[in-house]
Length: 365
Image 1 (cartoon, rainbow, N blue to C red):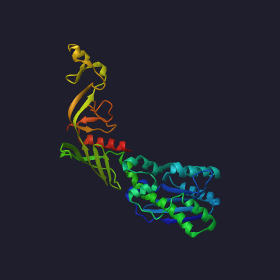
Image 2: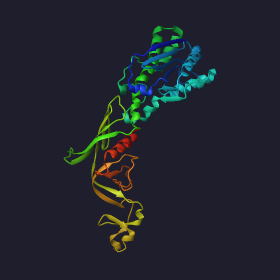
Image 3: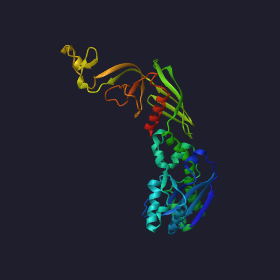
Image 4: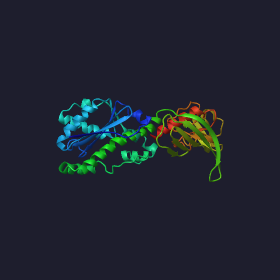
């Protein structure tokens, strides 16, 4: 068994420190395959910090026979910490280590009880960030992080098997570099968690106004423009484009617009069987009030026509937004799942917009 220790030449920001405290241990394993029972762990990389210094340790098995040695070395180190940080560790690294602990009769309780899996957190914000994949290399690319290592773990399995026979220093360097960068870059991608944290803390709207403009068809339109402060600092600026809503988030600032719908929408009344429909007037009245209306001028109301028409400017609403009971919801049709609210300055204030943005961003996760 060989143990390699090296200080990581990297200057973390307060964002990394927020998620990677001195009670945390980052780790990543390299294996000869995906089967916990049939394959071996041949390399375990760990990172911990003391003040602003980050140290990376690597426990390397010169042959599969030394697997137990590196696992025991890792467990002794892990037992000093309260939290593990991994990338996809809940599905791969942790179950693999637990299986080996069972096989070698090691005390798995040395592993810290708390666990932060960066991969699982990234999956929650995949749509928000527009990521095609949540693989570590994809997250690194999103954050603009560069690697020297050009291989993935699967490609290096044969390199390790060749090393066991040849003891090639070149092969060893490739194996160590890949694992080292998996661990080191895990530190660097921690700021990706800022986007997830942002979703759980309300924004502060600092200003908003209605702006008028003319669209490409020459039709006058209105949009609600606003600025807000984000409660965290985002590492990379993002644009969010959805129907009616455009947002630009950079560092701790957000600028956005909500396009108002101009036209006629419908507020659909419950219990349509209690109403009659008047075709000439295109309106409904309660049956109890329609007894004097000739039968030929009325018909049974349906779910489709039992509504109140309203013309004006409407603001589209995100799911789960909380509104007072006196606010009417308007739709294109009774089967439409996208509600609107009539825009008025008394309802749409800074507090409303803060709740609006909170719900909108939550729905993207």
